[in-house]
Length: 84
Image 1 (tube, helix red, strand yellow):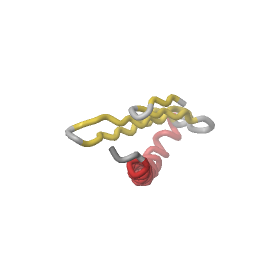
Image 2 (cartoon, rainbow, N blue to C red):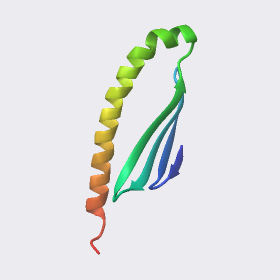
Image 3 (cartoon, rainbow, N blue to C red):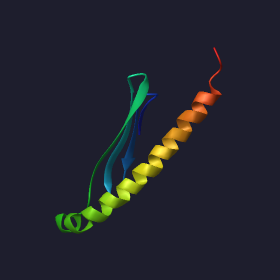
Image 4 (cartoon, one colour):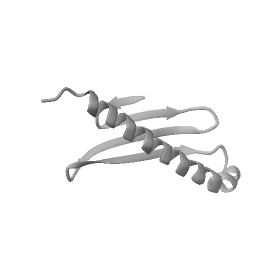
């Protein structure tokens, strides 16, 4: 896992689905742009064609959960920062 707070977090996937997940945080227009990248592959081309629509829907639901978790994490970290 790569970790470059607060800009980048990279997680390796192993097992049946191998690849890498990257969370990137960049300052933009007074806020933060959050980029989620998934670089992975399914075990075979046949499975890929069959499972791709299912995997896409699963990933969309996971992304919604991930965004909610990231939002909560950032809000907790902001509340924990000492007041200047």
